[in-house]
Length: 343
Image (cartoon, rainbow, N blue to C red; front, side):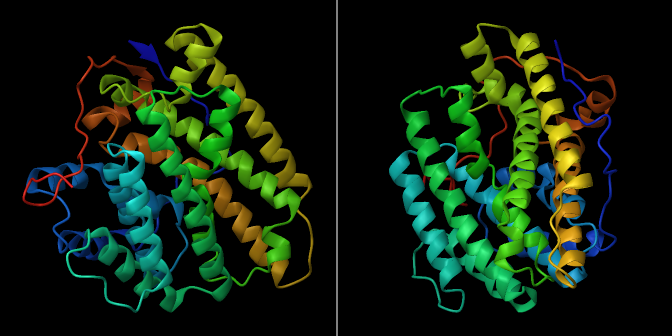
């Protein structure tokens, strides 16, 4: 067994959930099923992961229409994640090309016979732009494209069995964890100028939150990833490899690193947010609050869904003890068409 440190024991943001979640969850889930992207067994596994819950926790104050956008985005994220995690570099690049073309051309029908994620993405964004501000649309497209290209690099490194250094990993994960487009979604109902979002202080705040998010995610996902032999892109394995330590030593390293990030984040949040005048200042305050809430939402989702800990998530959140899974034990959905054939 190994112990998971409680890295957010003093985090100021509590668990919050959007009041529209039950209604939107049903609508978005029916929409996802309509594409037949997974076999029945894989669809059941997908449902148990409850990806929409992450959206409901991460965006607790959005109205119903915009919440639907966030929930559908989680489906795009994780559909891509499930397929790209077991694909080579060329296959992932082909996926990226399809997705980005669909985002840039949401009103154009997709080619016949194309992988279904093209149509999933097109419909997601065609609906989403109806309630998204121009600034949030621009930033989402830019950041989503950057995120996807880092996943291509991850596929190349996975093929080559490359374990990055701690420093390399932080640089890569800041893009491929997907927080930048997720933070852009916080802006759906805002009209924040580039000078506000791109201000060095706000960018530093975003990086600090991103680092905490991927550290939390790696802690939660380590057990299933090591079981299926896909843990070279996990901070626990990387720290063990670089620092010549064990799981306990790596968990302690992550805990100390996380605390440093938290202290820096709170110092900026409480003392250094720049001022631009109203209405920008009020919107910027909501934006940085949303970034802080994302850290809590991601950590909480890791325990409340069944992706990482099965039905024992809330118990593990309380006790912090995890039983190490044997190798090759995985419930990964995998890259299959609904008929079971390979991509």
